[in-house]
Amino acid sequence: TGLETEACAEWFGVVAAYAESYHQHFAAHLAAVAQFELCERDTYMLLLWVQNLYPNDIINSPKLVGELQGMGLGSLLPPRQIRLLEATFLSSEAANVRELMDRALELEARRWAEDVPPQRLDGHCHSELAIDIIQITSQAQAKAESITLHLGSQIKQVLLAELPAFLRSYRRAFNEFLERGKQLTNYRANVIANINNCLSFRMSMEQNWQVPQDTLSLLLGPLGELKSHGFDTLLQNLHEDLKPLFKRFTHTRWAAPVETLENIIATVDTRLPEFSELQGCFREELMEALHLHLVKEYIIQLSKGRLVLKTAEQQQQLAGYILANADTIQHFCTQHGSPATWLQPALPTLAEIIRLQDPSAIKIEVATYATCYPDFSKGHLSAILAIKGNLSNSEVKRIRSILDVSVGAQEPSRPLFSLIKVG
Image (tube, rainbow, N blue to C red; front, side, top):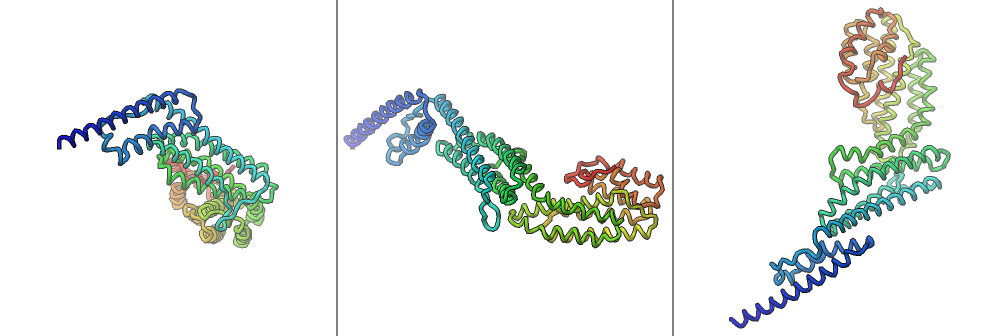
């Protein structure tokens, strides 16, 4: 009826007048508050109220939305004021995240220095540092997103600037520990725990950050160096133990290469349990590094220049030994998790170069080899050809010339011969 319609209109008019008065009064109060130098918590609460709670829980409340819809009440604060508050919030959060991450690293480094053993989790050495850092960054992200999703995306960029700096600090602290902590009882266990940390960091970044590959590589760079230094430390003693065993090849003039390699493999085998507390993916990586070391050291002994074989029969016999040794190394390393299929042809092809007698056939083999290992240089080739005492200087020169074409065609994705110095 007309009376009901009029009453309704009067009701809506009262609600609208009250809502507008309330909005203006509240906006003026908040504008006055915003002029003060607010603490971190007050800045957050002000933004949360202005950007989230007021527009979503009050203006768009199911009970009020019908009455307030179309009134165009707008924001409680002008856009410029909001941007200033957001900039203050982001700056405070960056400082807060930095302080929390630094404190977490400081506590972790103190545990290493005090020789506190790492936790064991599912049979692996475990550190809480990665989890702490992930929680710190996740909480900052969630806090910003509780205001607006846009602010959440802004703080992501802030965190992406803070994380590399933290990871570089982490790498420096770890390197200092590697140098100073060698006499500590739990030294190796803590090294392993920190290598395992890299997996948690990497998985978190890949799953949660969704950044371009070049940005991800930049983020993960310090972790790769940390892991590499950790591997070097874990393998250092084993490398020292293997040195005299590899020297037996040349000291005995390759008289018993099968037995020599058996001793080398047995020594490695006894040491593998030391790496059992690494995460599976890192055990594989460490095994690949060990695989590379065995192949590299074997080639170094072949390249010493102390073995000159004058006859085809002698060269074929040595080639047979090398093939047998290559098979033993490949089988042992693959059996224990090495994924380094790229190393498989390294020794067999050298054996074939030593076995072949036709210079043209050798040239073809060398050309193929240089495509597999672009860092195979004329110096490396000369050291292998020096074993073949029945090649003339002109034949050696012709064979070497094939590398004029092959070398430099591509950069090695994985170094092998660039790790081997030849005279």
